[in-house]
Image (cartoon, rainbow, N blue to C red; front, side, top):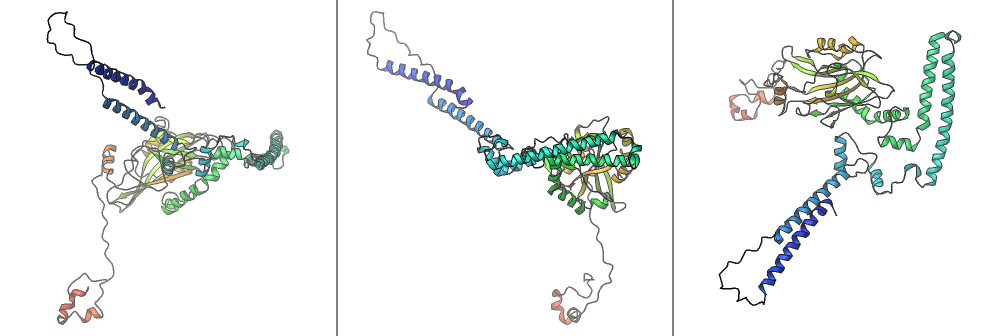
Length: 473
């Protein structure tokens, strides 16, 4: 029994009892056999009192129907919540909604269905002999890797304590050997856990600690699949190289979200959606915190005077910290005094113009270097003429991440431009007609023979009539 039914049950019982008492008293008075008392005095005419109004059976039915409706609504809400659970959902519409919200379902649909109907046995305690025997082999291999890591760390410590003049090649060769040995230790850390099913399950469930090398390795391998291929394909298809940068190779996973909806790279978005600043999910695959700059630029601003396209900066922020465990980067929540250089400008396009490419670049700053926000505001406050290549070279930045979306004129563009204070909503671009430079070709063959007045009746079938200048060139 639900909470709604439990709350309405005492009320319904009391109403039923009152109705039953009223009916019983009414029936007993109608069949009374007692004689009237004559000694009380003269008989007077009195009007029988109206019985107190009590709720009818219809009102009780209405209350029951309302309680049942509330119960059905609560049951429907609980069912929807259960279907939107990313751990156990199997509904197609729920999977699509979770993906749009940025929280995709965990694992395969078969796995989620098995979890929903299982007895919640711990993964490492599954009662399968082959599985448990394989885990023992993996544990032995892991112990070997841990011993190798301990040996390498001891070698690194001895080499660090050795003076540079006692090492062949001096300080330069010593640093190279230390870097190589540290890189080998990181590789051993990955090999120690790369085959562990418990570690892989935690990563697939989204519970992995990105400060550990094994989870960063899994994340990079996942990104190097389809997401990396899609973003590199968009860079080539939309001519980001060489229109924006002469050379660029992304090494960081950058996901774009507008109003909690994940945007596919290169998608054409409505102007009302892009009116608010987006949220980025920047996943790096090397350890440590670093400062980055985020720039959003439009590389397809039409210029009617020069008959070409210019560039415009829509957003610029610097000194933004990110780390493997802190990938979320809302562009609207950055520090307006120390990080924000140019506030967000909604994406827009004039009527008749081709689609605009709005590129989102994440540029890594030099270690320990903090950019001067006042200088950035002074340089790029005009927005027009912004160049990501010039910005990169001037401040010594390294482009590491990229995403892109497009915008065209739609029904909401004029209102968005008005709210943002951007002029030009009444401008419409039209293509110029390009006339052929070839001389007009004289009629030949059938057309030339039948241009005489004798064939006047056939002129309507000919596209090349003498005296009319719409013939082919």
